[in-house]
Image (tube, rainbow over all chains, first blue to last red):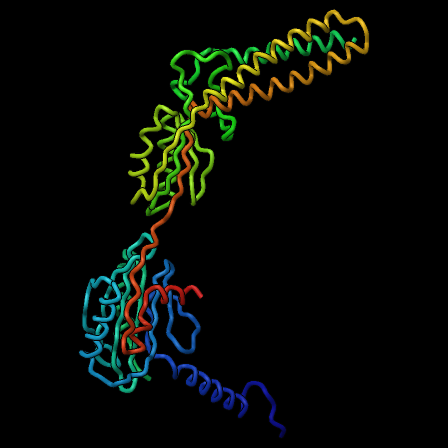
Amino acid sequence: MTPVKGPGGRWLLAGAVAATIALLATCAGTPSVVPPEGFAVYDDPEIVRAVSPEGVRFRVRYEAHEPEQSLEFWREALRRHLERSGYGLLAEESFSAVAGDGALFEWVAPVGTEDWIYLTAVLPAGDRLIIAEAAGPAELYRARRGAIAESLESIGSD
Amino acid sequence: MRGPRMLAAVAVFLCLGGFLGTAVPHAVAQDGGPGAGVGDAGGPDVSPPGVAAAGEDFLALEARARLLVSDREDAAQALITWTEDQGGYFVERSLERVVLRIPSERFAELRSVAGAAAEEVITYNPSAQDLREELSGVEAAIVSREENLERVLAFLEESDDVEGTLALEREIASLMLHLESLRGRARALRTRVAYARAEIALSAQAAGIPDAPPSSFDWLNSLDLYDFLSEARQ
């Protein structure tokens, strides 16, 4: 019997396998994370990017963990760098995610005539660092803060 | 038959011009009054041409300023609202600048009003131009032209040949045109005296944070709010 394309049979199985491989290959470059509730997710193979309807932004990405150091090292390095850059520190916290422990900072900076809050978080995960960022006008960001925090806790590495 | 019709038209013109030119004989409108929505050269008809009264003010006041403001729209509106409350009007409005006509007696207050609307007054340059000589010259020319016109009309009444009548009518038309131009010029000059002109440029603050010295770690250098926002817009 000659194999035919369409439902049923080995063609369907082969197609499903191929799709799964493609999906896994696509997802290999991005951390595993549940986007904040209410955010729309961009179709990006390398970075998890999402935005709320009122414009609060969120993204999570991998960076090379080089040189490999502890969370405390990176916490200190991040704080010093952004303080020196002129950002105003609002809050510093630790958080626990699927992939391990991380540190987050909330900063304030002007955008035009508004004050914006900029979140930066770092989580060492083996040979990679997971970097998370979020930003929005202060009041809008605060309204989404809970959802962002839950999203950070869902971060896992593949 | 053209003669009588022309005569009637000229008579109407003279009466109308006379009304506009000889209304209430005071040089400067003390209460300003709202603009008639006309442009810079026009403005409200504030006083007639004529011999200047003793003590009359002939200074045309002007100011050029540049303000640093946090919100250009708000600053422009604040300046325009104050101007209109004083009986003035705006000639031009944009995000970059406003051009105002302010009753001259309120001009001295503009500096403090501009300061209140701005984060910083970068420059403020007032100036004044004495228009006495120019205005007197224009008004003298008006009087002279009116006298000429009266003489020509008298000749026209007595004219009994076609060629002579035609020539007189041409002369009358030319005089009328010239008179109207002079009267317009006189009104414009008196408006410049009555309403000071202020041209105010608005600069917005560009808030931001200074560039950071680079970190030894590349991923730290990638942490930047403004780059994050730019990338989100792409």
